[in-house]
Amino acid sequence: MRVTKLKAKGLRDRLMRKARVFDAAKYRDNPTAIAEYLNDALSSGDSVLIAKAIGNMVHAQGMSRFSRKSGINREYLYRVSGNPKLATVVKALLAFDVQLSVKPIRRPVVLGERQGLMKQSDPGPDKGVKAGK
Image (cartoon, rainbow, N blue to C red; front, side):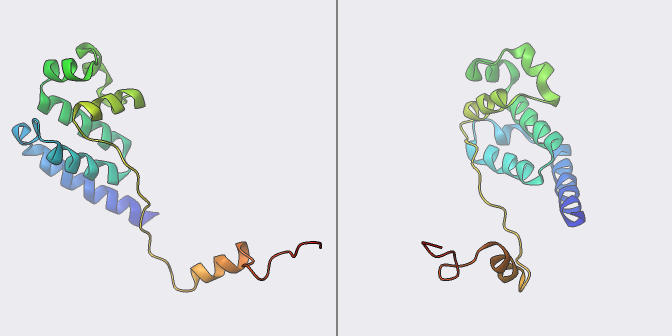
């Protein structure tokens, strides 16, 4: 658990350094750059950092322009910056011309751990309960 927090903190530090030299022009109408930036934030697992990254992308597009493209009221965009609803996030991603996808987290398997789990939870094909018993 501690390693995850340290990794998130390291990522947060890197994103904050990037934020200080944030070049909005790089992200205007550039779905590839937007996706890379948002994926970095999403991989942190930090909801505050994710909301901040989405807000940065909204500002990079220009609030009025983004409001028209996404169909989200401009005044609402200013108010929602800290904790957006999922529906708002989805509309924002579509307006950025990017999509949200999910993939499994790669976690290292400790030698012997996987076999121990198999013995406890999975009787295996030939060790299961036989029909009729």
